[in-house]
Amino acid sequence: MWNDWFVDVGYGVHADQAQAEGWVRILASLYARGREDELIDIFLGPEDTSLVVEGYSLEYTYRRGPKIDERLFVLTPD
Image (cartoon, rainbow, N blue to C red):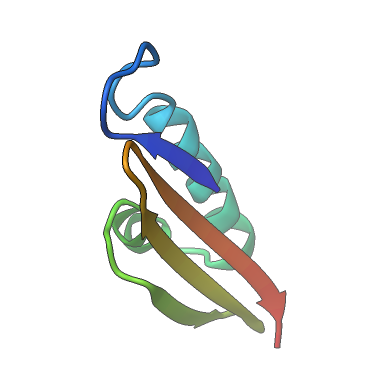
């Protein structure tokens, strides 16, 4: 999960984005090889998405808050 600040309240706008993208790339390298860029695009987007990757279900949810967007991947075995 990444709590993405889209309003600067002292932490900066999109604080920790590079770190969050790094974690998504690690997730992809372990469970969705070759789909790293696709997962990054999903993770930075505003639409809930479901994928099946190498025997796992990968659910992405996006929730807009007043100052923070919650971006979450959940991986579960099929």
